[in-house]
Length: 272
Image 1 (cartoon, rainbow, N blue to C red):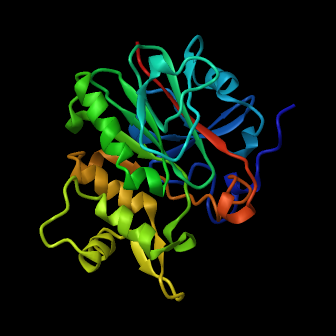
Image 2: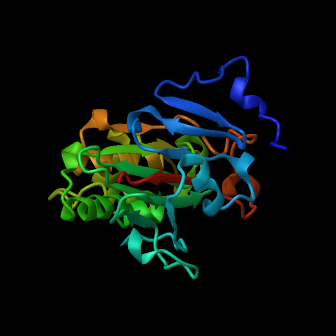
């Protein structure tokens, strides 16, 4: 028997499917979130409601007969072809790019950003686990470069950044902010320095002050969005989910909130 739908799906202040640009999809197994921008691609951002069900099971809720590709995530920036991630033990990495049709690509997290990329012209897709370390190491530009090397055009790509910790709830040390800020550009601008780097983060809405000295509030999704735009992805082809994993306790696991090792999965299927 499926679990009861958590209250946040239809609470008074946010009615069911009241997230602009995002849609809750219901099935006999539960509910998962889709990004309207990726219409035409089978995909889903799953919630804690699906706890205990691995991608081998979840893939069947997105599409029938697809292969499953996943990684041993290490908070890095390695992006692998899906064909290299087909069996346990899964290879180490934090990003996958499809190299055939009918592949379902999966990443998991519990505050880090799940990022799904799709090329509607070729049907190719990518999935990345983008925590601050991955963003600082430029995992998203690496995924774009792999797609481009296979024939995609970056101006054709669609990108969805799923539920993750919101900036106001993500306290980091100043060194983390500086590493993420330095990664917004492929090469540091001539005037780059600590203050310039922090100013760049503030300008794109990724940095807010924290009352504790030497700490910041970092919006990793805002930084990721700016990084994508700097890579040539048009702003209108990027969607950012407004849901915060820390705030939405009934919907999502959160390491920051609970200090418990539990994750939710996100996946996308390459078109044949």
